[in-house]
Image 1 (cartoon, rainbow, N blue to C red):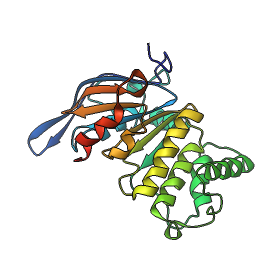
Image 2: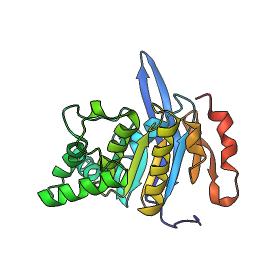
Image 3: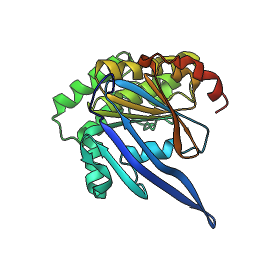
Image 4: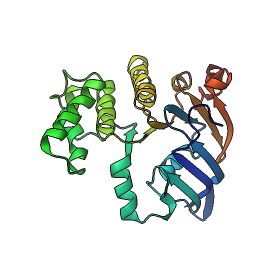
Length: 249
């Protein structure tokens, strides 16, 4: 039994994914299965090209696997139409990317408000949620600044606020700290960990940043399209020892 919850919020079963490169078919994911649970920060690590970002994209309903099944919040993601997947992402998921994906002309507050408009909330609820999210990431004094006026760490915190303002059950992060210095990267790591534990979210992150390993509740090591090892902090495994093998990635 899982020590935090007996019910997985994300489940992938025998996932296969390949891409064509010239005349060669490259197998990216091979017969991969995993469960991801709420209220913990789960980290997927591994060398470049091992398939970790592809796995994140499939399990978050951004793309289809060639075969296999993906269930998220008890919904069969693999069986949904494109429109149904878009609706699922809108209502249940938040995304954090390496490149921030902010609009240059919008203030931090407007960046966070924008996706809430698509949820068809009333104006007062949109403003309330956006302000609360920016306050949670420590940017209540910077909410009227545009991206050019923000540091890299502040931009990433705006992106996190934008993701959590939707109040999603599932939060996905793809290399969220790789473009940040030590201090700003640490702030982002602390935020992701707190979101998982305080909000009871399912937080799934892929990264080659060894700093994340020390803070993850669970670490999945990928190689050659498969999960090779699975460490969990609360089962007595000394997770920080994993730092060294992944400093090269």
